Length: 328
View 1 (cartoon, helix red, strand yellow):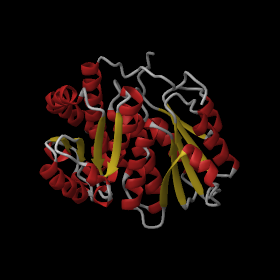
View 2 (tube, helix red, strand yellow):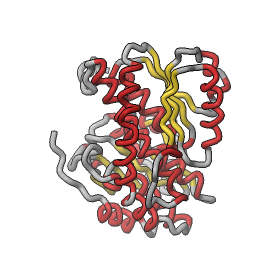
View 3 (cartoon, helix red, strand yellow):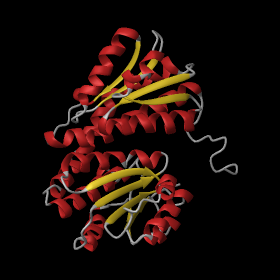
């Protein structure tokens, strides 16, 4: 499918203008599957910046079945589905609207069923061709920054725009830098039956999407995302000399957790594939934004890793056994 070029900034500003006079106590970021990965960095941004405004990420169906009394007119709910058709996310939007919450939906296509359930909508660009600011991640960073600014008085929106616009060169160079390592990963792990990925903070979202989506969904490889802070509370017992671990290392406030896990792994396995934002040149991205936007850089590199192993295994990333093919 061909997706037209999309520029999101004016659309996002229109949404923020539409809610600027509303006072919220909390924000919910709601999705399923791969769309979940771009929600967690927004929660992380709010949690590390706001004093009186809260954000929670939930799976779409759990959001409904929890039936929290806090989902009301004091809440803003942002939901994402790439094609705007995910049944659970559509139902979650309808549920939030019925509870009186302000509902913002985002998708890659116009006129979807998800869009029809929301009060506000932002269309984003295709991740393979759009600039970072115009992707789903970019939209979530912008919406979150704008809502934070309105609710907390933190002057963050303009600088978020500036730093997102500076990210394309960073990602392009990082992909060149990690091309050989991605190919090495593909060759080295093509026969493995299980993989592990670790991260913390905003980087943990990428451990999740790498394992759940890129490996299990798209490659049918058993893959386990492990929070670096939980690693020493059970999962590290599974590590052996030949255990393949994709170690994701960001630049946010939680990096110590990743460094601690890496120190252990370097002693007990010979197969670490490290994606480290400390090795990436962030060029014009400001220091305070490297930790937040690093998740999007990691995401692009993880996609390279998934393409590399798909090529080595001769297993297309587009093949499915069950998804959209059987009743579930």
